[in-house]
Image 1: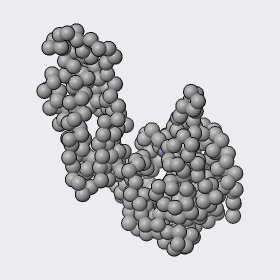
Image 2 (image 1 turned 90 degrees about the vertical axis):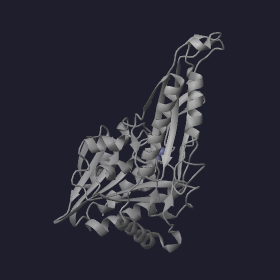
Image 3 (image 1 turned 120 degrees about the horizontal axis):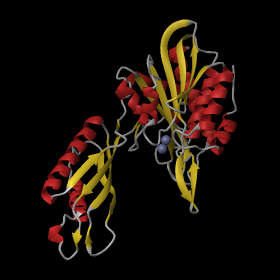
Image 4 (image 1 turned 120 degrees about the vertical axis):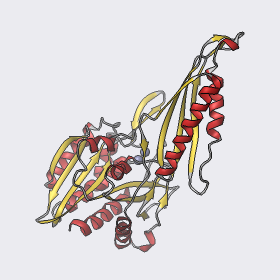
Length: 366
Ligand SMILES: [Zn+2]
Ligand SMILES: [Zn+2]
């Protein structure tokens, strides 16, 4: 049985944070390690992704285990800096530790380990799908560390119910004029204000969790010129795909109505598309639940959680509806929270996550 020192792997990956589609050092290291364990390795999947593959002696299903690799950009003391503030380094460490143990234990079917690029920018999963990485995969398991706000350090949950997420960009084009002659122009600032009120008035089923809010308005710079252009950002989240579709329809209606009312041209786009809500397979949720109890004991089991964050992992089931997906949450005490510039987690909690992955994987391909 191959074994790796998970803490050393974590420390190394933590020291080389790289942005989405730039995970060169990270993916090179992970590919070398997989090769060492005996996996057939493919690099350059979805630009910087890596897949390791091991086939068992007997026919059986294809199981994929997926971890994301990218870090986040910050400005620290006035200088740009990349940091692992979402803990994707911890995911690669858990996945690599699991891959090491599983390497000589695949009896039936095929095990594929996917190190995916660019989760944070929402396009990494789509890139690996485009390269055919998910073709023929029957089961997929993903994972994410959980912050202190979700579950206690050292506990694990068999499902993280993320939100569907859409990042909406709105561009308003009015008409400039002298501030003394506003009737000759179309005021983009006022149009943005009216549209903001309309967006804040959107109502969806209150039984569902959802939120729709304007997060940026850029427009104008002086007192006495009616501004011609405005640029708005709207962050949209909902617990399921139907609700986010409804929200976007209502947003478009607001845009169309206000464009007519104000006499402006307004264009709504979603450059990164809609990041879908999860569609977990109940069998996979149960498999992870059983594995958590078996590995970490009942006391460290936590019921599935709801989380307003998005995850591009859910493109896999949206593109391949028959794919059976599960997603493990590993309580690692991430403090003060994910995406905080000073986020830190308890690396001693990662081994449990790796052990649960191994346990669950062996039920399918062992
Ligand atoms: Zn993140
Ligand atoms: Zn993340």
